[in-house]
Length: 336
Image (cartoon, rainbow, N blue to C red; front, top):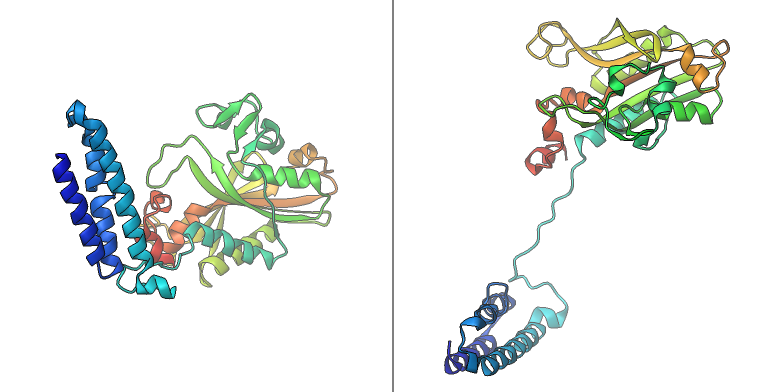
């Protein structure tokens, strides 16, 4: 573009600005001339193609044009009826803000906290970065246990790791409080799992702990989890306990709920068994009490834990755990 063509374009831009009748037309001119892909920025980028002897004058003219058109556009915008009245210009495209939706994981955590609050449980929290004692030793996990290996756990240093469960919060709670203790511990946990439809290296757990100087039995644990099952999944949900092993509980049990899809009749979801595995639980091992300074002869208690993602997937019929982390509004908007 020559200096003569530049002057003609300048005059045209000012005439178009003067003739603009509304804010939409003014905005279109701003985009046309000074926007990121507008004419003036394009001329600045193309300065290298201007003959060397003409560049100083050409550059000065372009910058003067930019200042002039920007001032004219600003004045036009300020003079619009909507701007003068301090009102919204109805000719401009609107911004539509949809109300947010509660994430299914947040909903499960909050519902769980409300259910257990009726039973006297409070919510306890702890750090995501833990030490070996709280995450393994105090939970009666032997030094040779495979979960301690670097192939299973995210170790940050010799005595620092990303917690593999929320059980360390129970350890911290017992070390800081005398019995009775009745808490649930929701939070993020981390394990070296390969992500697929049912696994993630970062997921959420809710663990519960009840310890008292009065006798606490496995029957207390069963009644607590049966109440939670009915409140969370529906009044006709059943609970089944199966013998299992965990280092920090003795005896230990796996806890199953009747399948929410077939209601115990057997289907593809429950692999025709009528049951869905939900949680691990048991009576707190006496050696755990010794680690936190409790007298195992004077106290007793139970503990349980389950995955928040698993509850959400079962409750809301979500087939792939990755949907919970992809932030797809088409999925999340269903929970509004």
